[in-house]
Figure 1 (cartoon, rainbow, N blue to C red):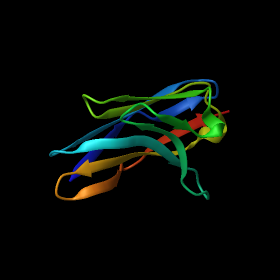
Figure 2 (cartoon, helix red, strand yellow):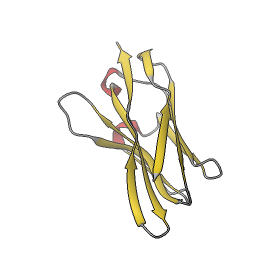
Figure 3 (tube, rainbow, N blue to C red):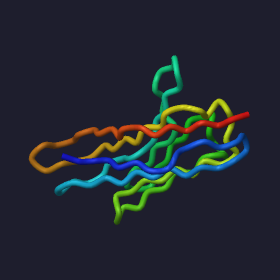
Figure 4 (cartoon, rainbow, N blue to C red):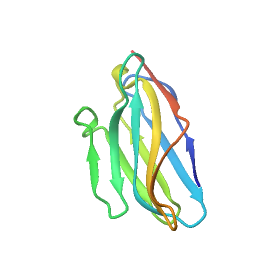
Length: 120
C-alpha cells in the first residue's frame, strides 16, 4: 500500500503563484511516474503535468510556460510550481502516482485532492 500526502493549494489572485507538493510513502515501492491532475466543477479530470522517474515531463498545453513539475526521487516527492495563475486554473488538484510494488506489480494511486482557487 502506498499513501500520498498532498500539501499546498489555497486562494490566490490572478497572476500569483502557488506550490503543490505530494509525498509518497509506503513499504518497498518504486516510482514509474508521478503527476498532477485537476478537476473543475462540471468538468472531467484532466492531466496537468506528469514526470517519470527518469525525468521525462509532459505538460497540458494550457499550463506550458507557467507551471513547472519536479520530482525528488530520494524523497518520493513531486512538486508543482504554478506561476502566472489564471482564474481558469481554479480546480481541485489531485496527485497521482504510478508505482511498482514487489509481489503486486504495477499500481496506481490518487491523493485526496487539494483546492486551488484563483480570483480575478
